[in-house]
Amino acid sequence: MTAAPAPIQCDLLVVGGGINGTGIARDAVGRGLSTVLCEAGDLARATSSASSKLIHGGLRYLEYYEFRLVREALSEREVLLRAAPHIIWPLRFVLPHNPGLRPAWMIRLGLFLYDHLGGRKLLPASEGVRLRRHRYGKGTKAALDKAFVYSDCWVQDARLVVLNALDAQERGAQILTHTRLIHAERIGGRWEATLERADGTRLTVSAAAIANAAGPWVSDVLNERLGRKTDKRVRLIKGSHIVVPKLHAGDQAFILQNADRRIVFVIPYEGDYSLIGTTDHDYQGDPAQVAITPEETDYLCAIANAHFEKQISAADVVWSYSGVRPLYDDAAANASAVTRDYTLDLDAPAGAAPLLSVFGGKITTYRCLALEAVDDLLTALGKPVSAGLGRNWTADAPLPGGDIPNADFNGFLRQLEAEYPFLPQGLARRYARAYGTRSRRMLGPAQSFDDLGADLGDGVYEAELRYLRAVEWAQTAEDVLWRRSKLGLHVSARTQMAVVGWFKGSAQALSA
Figure (cartoon, rainbow, N blue to C red):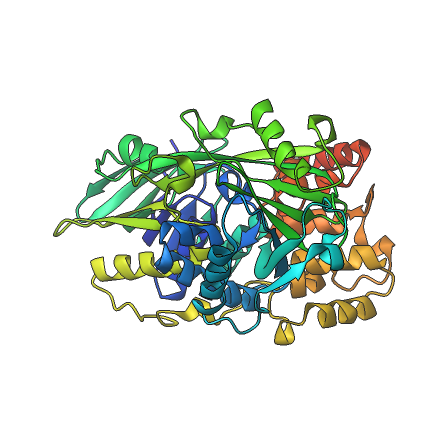
């Protein structure tokens, strides 16, 4: 009879492989906590890959007096821009003025606060423009003239999650994907947790503390896996987006007001498309089964049609996605008004192993959330909060691939093109955007396409798939085509099937 493997010993077990979980794991291991992270599926499989892809202060949150959250988010834009200039970049947002909605003075006041609350240094200030005389107005309806323009940032959200996990692992954390928490209980001052892999094998983790960052499943983990109760609740808010052929020229985004006082973004997406979203609805079902409804599609199309000359309908949607935001339930009357701030619930009875649960949050402030969470955990464990690399070490540490001198992406791209002259310009740019300086690790000493292995079509080569499988936890074609990248929008059905076949063949080879 084979003896059961010895329990994995660690200071911290993180449950959940979204942006908050990977951010906590990265911060914790950098401050000296031995860390294990378990994720039931793929990294960023749920909410963290279903965002509007923005690092932003949240202009509309000012209407709800969320000044602390907006200030923190505005400050974080430039911290994250410096940490990962390959997957995060500045974006100008155009807000057409509708006299029947928010008055101009209110918008000007909001933008004044937006410019000054967060200590802006890298991003340009807001301004007013006349769309009929400005390049930003091309493609917008003739009735729209006055507009306001401000800055925020774009992010490849799922890649941000993967890079946090990768940095955590390279600093000593164990990242266990496709591994779910079955049960955990406090025994002898520690948590004894049972985890189960996708193949049914089980392992035990003995942890001094647990961080419950399971996103939409945070309450399920508390109640069903840990047997704990709390008066704090998560409110599930569904947000859906559609992708259509590009609606306007230029690289600016639009933020559109609607009569229901909601706002909708129209963002240049993947070169050829516009990303339109998001909706806001309370959600009661299984977060894993969330999907856009015809009514949501019609709603988003109608708002876009009110502002752009090019008219769209459901027939123009080439892709859509929905996510469930696990917001802290502050008893707001409608979904749009629910706070986007986060709440950390620390359960640390005297002599018992601490448990920290994350309610709410947004992708922009994940690093601040992680810092505060690790502060609480270290204090509960009786350890100094400035242990290891220091309390705020992540503010100055680039994410993998982000160590680009002076955050000069274009300069780095030119250098990469010179090092690998056989790469077409578009492919070199895609590699640079996805992997930053880690492109060199993926490409290695390649001097021609022959050195990149099999050609699966449409610029997808075996070298990239090998890298994603070996380094970034990709196990399926979906992991690559829709989370590590958005190649699914660009490559043919034949190429997609070739990627599916490659992963099936790799799995068979690995199990042989």
